[in-house]
Image (tube, rainbow, N blue to C red; front, side):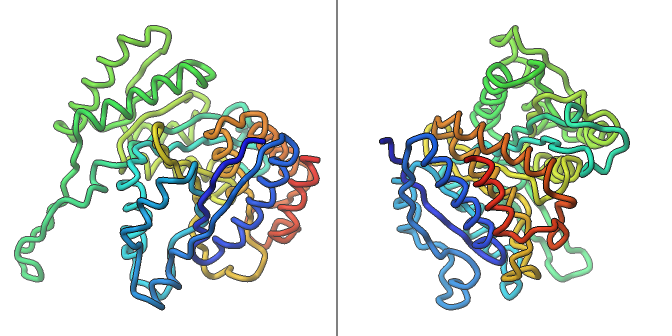
Length: 352
């Protein structure tokens, strides 16, 4: 029986609650499809930081490299200043483990949960490939004359040919293998960001020559957000930089039904990848057993797909669709008609 070694970082707030349900579903799927999950839990997050003032020990990175994948709940604690945990854990893991792709499926499971008029599941079914290790998130910049009337804050978008090309190439391969329309859209801002997106655009069309079977197009980021709302059915696969990807994927989560259903992967195609629900730690709901765990469940399906367990991943995703369509009246915390653990049970029962 094949065994996968999975690191669990349940994290803060409602993270442990949704990870518990995601693991329950993954274990049921493993039993059904004859493989095994060997899990090891880490307590990285706000509580550990408050207790020890340690964010992420240096030894953790090397240890995490020995796993097949990482399953993350959420990072963010109300008693810790914003940025400390996010930079010290999330960004450090992405950068040090070279998880240079952020993969975000945007899939509407039921039209009842879409805020857009007359849009159906077949209209909202696309994927965003976000560069995950460069751009504005690199943390480069400085203050000049901080605190003075003539203060200047400089934030640098750092883009390398290597970083851009490997992201673009991943997006072309993904479109070729998984795109429903075999169409790849570059989302940028070439008319204003004339250095960074000159590099992106040149690289995009140079790599495109190697993929004659993939249709290509370009759209400004502001137009992309507009068409997400007006005509989301136009999109198949989108590739973009770190900042724009962060923004448009949150909009994508809303049109697919909200953060409670949105999952994402931080991918290193040659190394260790990390999968997580998008919605964050939601601390005000901690311990109430009312948060929607389906994003974590879908993140688990993405993890299994990365491991090559495609039948198990397909089964989880189809079961989630069935649960959403037949059981849930709402996807918001406390309004689903079921508790967090009951929703996990519904998916497990559906798998059986």
